[in-house]
Image (tube, rainbow, N blue to C red; front, side, top):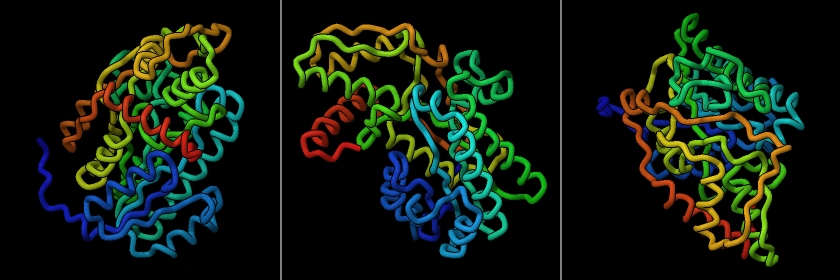
Length: 323
């Protein structure tokens, strides 16, 4: 177990970009629970991070920051990635490159870049080891997004080499949990399936149709676990190597849909539209580096996490507060 002594959260002042997003809200809550000295939440309505002047203003406004955790991203499911590949590439690249460069210029001691496992090659051997990141081209439907985020790993390693700058790069697997994005235009697979099933139940329908053939596998990390992993890395990880954040399991989309149907009480038919893409064939991470370098392991079981997510969605839906 790595040494976790000597870190004082009360002395830290952390900028969190994307603070109003799914992961951002959970991370800010976790940092507050840790006793972080100051949390500077950055939202797109205040700072368009694609623009140099706004990034410079950010570091002027928070001149005493000790770390940046960069979560802001243009994200979405397969459909959104296919529809807006140029937007996903440009927005993610510009935000990350400008934020890290001006953090370095402003003398912010640490930069935490949160990437994506979409950066991995399409046919990466399972479980994905960080050393495999450069062994091929990413899955085509989300390659522009994956490559744009991957460039922040390159930037951080280059800055460490040239400037001695402490930039780290984390690779979280697919996240899920309360507060997720349930917009059908941009949501990921778990909220998309939950919404389709609950919609069908309320409409009295006996069939839902999902994309692909259900055979691709995915790994999922509960959002509160992800927030805890990012905080641990912010505190204790100071090396150039990228680090996976995951739960260390895989489940097929077909089995996932059947599990969500069971947990929601849906007894109708699940059909598959094989004319639609299913994405990368398999995803599961080797999570040993996170455990060895800064002591992170997922705690929330998948079934429990899904139950919490479904319960949150039904309550938020009833209250009209679903994102």
